[in-house]
Every structure is written in structure tokens, then in C-alpha cells.
Length: 466
Image (cartoon, rainbow, N blue to C red; front, top):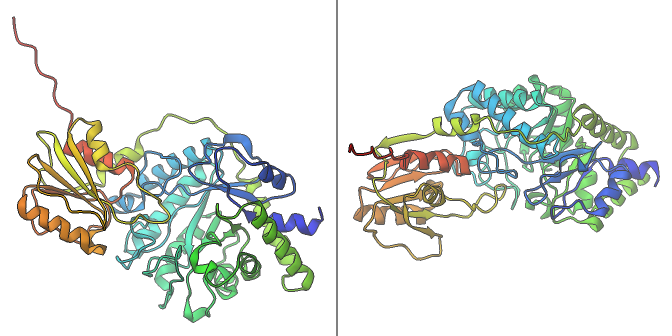
């Protein structure tokens, strides 16, 4: 294999399916592959891949590959305790290291200004730019104190948009002052990597940020002074793939200033080989400077050297994540259940980044022995009738889903004593309720914290005197 081909492989971060590292990945690592991105069905790998970047999306809360007992960003932002955020990030980083990952593709540094945002939502620390900047820096510090590289995302900001870049190209048509401040805070905290957003910023041209030299080189590198690794969001996402092919996008991203190219699980050995070939051909045709490719591959190698895969064994969780989830609960009224309840879970389409929600509040309450039945309602499904037992309604971003609001209002008209639990952004409030609980996330640890509140452990009965 030529040195040019090794350089081209050195900027690629493909993914793969299944729990075993495929042979083609192992061969590519031997040939100079930059690294891999792990998903839930891949981990833990521990020390199977050494000398390369092993990245994982372990944001905590809703977006988890490891199932760690840690809340996501919104819960941490509600607490507004930077020390707690740093400690949760450390707990997450230890879990990443135990699984064999040396890069965590977190924190989300987006300021979630638009509550209709379909991509970010509870993944953001909040809508206040100073708060987001403060917690972004804390998360970076906590992650890197544990020997795992942090990656702030999605530059230059995805929280002011409404569209989901997994499906289409959003436009960020505003001054970048506020969206950039959390990234500036991350850079000041010496963040090792920054991930690009597939968003269009008209003030900087029509090309998405991932492919935009004015944003990546001129703004991020020259103006903001970032000298770490620039990682793209996955190139097969709709915002890119609907206009650019993977090979064209890869070459454009490198030319714009990206160093590492994420390729998702829909790209296998053949597609990765094609992307590598396109990069080599672009250099040979003079469309991409070899010096730029060598610079990118060099940054990737340096990051892998600075943050080697530790392969440490899992440690007992410290519980800081569980405590943070408990502290993030916001409660009105008395939600405690004196007997087993009927739980109605409204299930909207999940965030693409999070995937299907497999564990619900009904499961958490069942584990505590307080469930008579669990009904899961989707948009196209039939509405449940009134229940005779205590009723718990579980909502998810009800402000974005009229069918949830209508279903909840209909049930509450018959059962105004019901407990309402909002697991997303608490923008819409039901007109009446027996109690109202906000978890600020639908991660398992958030739901278990709510279940503890709804179904506290019963005191053991005192033995009668003889």
C-alpha cells in the first residue's frame, strides 16, 4: 500500500455492525486506518483496537451506547452545578475507557434556543448561552481528566435550527456570536476535538459547515485558534447525502479543514474503500493538497497517541449520575402512588441520535411493584380509555406533538387526579393534574429517579408484640 493510500485511510472513522471486530477493519487498522466509531451493538471492545481512535457517542441520558446510569445534558443544565457536570462526565469517561473507547463524541455544545428543534432538545444543557458555555467546559474537563478525549459538537451550532440534519439540511441564518460561545469555552478548556454540524450558514456561503472552508479553516482554526482534531458528523446523514455523494463529501470536507471523517454503519468495506480511493484520486488530480491530507492524518495519529485506549476494567459506578438525575426532578403536587397504577406512555418518533426507547417509566415502576398495566400509545394508535386504578401519563416533548396534548387532555378530563410526567422539554403544561413531574430526559436513570419518587420503598411492617 502506498503512503498516499495510508494517509487517506488515516483520516477515516468507519463503523461496523455486530459485537466482533470484522477482519476488514483489522486489516484497515494495520494499513493505517484512523479509527472507528462504536455503537451499542459493538461495545464493549476493551483493548481489541490499539493505536487508533475508538470513538463513541456516550452523551448520557437519552443518547447512550453503554447504558450508563448517567443523565443527559438538560438535566445537568437544570441543576446548573458545574461540579456535578464535571463529575458525571468523569463517570461517563470511565465507562468509555472500560469499553475500549478513547474518544467520547460529547458534549453537545449547542444552545437549544428553538424548542421545536427536532435534533437537539434534551441533548443540550439549555437555552441560556452562558449556562451552556459553563457546562460545556466542565464536561470537557471531566472527560479529559479521565484520559478520554472530549469532542464538543455540533460546530458552529445546531440549537438555533428546527430541522434535523439526519434527514435534511438546516439553515442557521443569524449572527454566530451566541452559538459560538460554548465552543470558545470548550477551546479554552483545551478540548481535544470538535465535531462539525451539517448546517448551512448563509453568511459564510451555501456549503454546509462540514464542507465549508470559511467556517472550518478561517473561523474555527484562524479566528478561534482551535488546533485540535476536527471530526465530521456522519457523512451519510441526509443533510449531506441528499446533495453530495460520500466520496465527493469526503474530499470537500478535508479541503475545508476537517481531519477525521465519520462514516456510519450503512458504509461497509466497499464504501470505505471507495472513499479512500476518491481521496487518493483527488490528491493525484491536484484537487486536494497532499499536505492538507498529511496534516489531517497527522492530527488523528497525534490524538490517538495523546489519548491511548486504556483497556481498563469496568469500575463500580460511583452513583453521581443517579444523584444528579434525582436532583434534576421538578415536582408539583404529591405524585406518590399508594397502589398499583395504570401507566399510559405516549411514544413519539424518537430522536434519530438516540434511537428507539426500549425502557419506559412503566418498566421502572414495574420493577418497584407499582404497576397494574402499561399502555404505550403512538401517533397512529388508538387512544386508551379511562382507568379505574391510579393513572400515570408519560409525555415526551408534548409541545411538539398535538396528538399527545389531545390524548392527555382527554384522559385528564376524566381523571384530573392523574400524575403527569414530562420526560422531554417542559414547554406545554396540562390544564389540570393531580401531580406534575419533569424528568428533563428519558434516559433510564431519569425514569428510575421518577419511579423512586412515585413509588418510594414501603416501610417494613413492624412485628406485633407477643
